[in-house]
Length: 406
Image 1 (tube, rainbow, N blue to C red):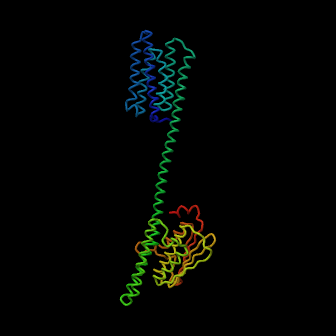
Image 2: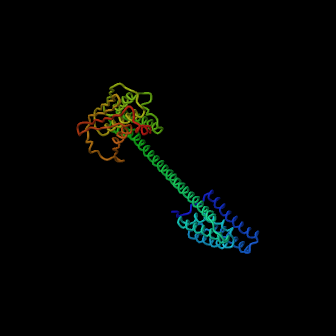
Image 3: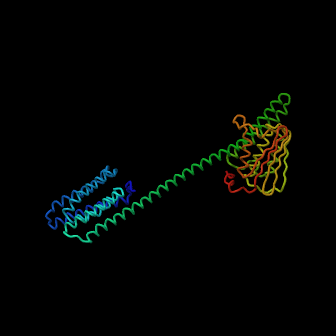
């Protein structure tokens, strides 16, 4: 049911003005014919036509009539009453019925509009028949055909308007959905970048600072009795600080880690084992198995970071004397194993990560592996050392490639 008049657009506003001009033109025609034919009631016809035209012109300008359907109905009733008076005075007023059809269908609810159109058509036929003093089928066809055309035009316009409104709402919903999707993607991107930075900070700056702290403690214990050992520890701490400054600058710029520049992953892991053995009381050995194949930069970075984090955990927590780092090329997979002879732990009873005490290492390593479609497993038991195994596919899946490039 038509419960509200469609909002005026530039096109519909132009049509409304044309409709009002048509009413005025037909009223002028009726008044002019009455004067030209020197009809007995010519003066009354002119007055009635003027009143009807004035009411037709002023009504749409009143805010209450534009905003209230009830007020519009009363206005139409007043215009119709004046038109009936004009119809009783002049047969030419029958032509004014046609624009009245459009006003009634546009401003009234569907059923009320149909009733008003039918009543107007009957009044036009009756009035014209009374003026001519006869009745014929032709008198019925004109007003009835005009009413049918008006109904078809107005209902067709309303159907087009409803379809246009549905499309407009659909476009608004799609626009809002796209905005929500863009916001969600932005949020996801921010979270992913935050996670990446957290992993990089943990595996570079945090681990480096931890190593420096251990070296400085060792230097402090060596003083004053063993100044040569203290100097060696301080020099190692200074070198660790230099290396970590380089790491920080590179990951901020999202570049390849310095240890991978101009070297293979195997060479970088071997240097990592050598550096760890030199700086700490831990003997780390590197082993390479299988035929090396070129790896994506994301794979090399992930495996190097996992090895750095694993050895850092071994130095800080395991109290181990030796660690074995093995890089294995297994056909369509590459694996990294880090095994130590430390005190071990219960993987099921790990403490929750805490900003003060740490505990983010294993979670960060697992996230790195999973981001590339791989896995990370940890096997350990109190007093039996620890084995950490990371495995990555050589060709990342379509689901992991976008995340791997972050």
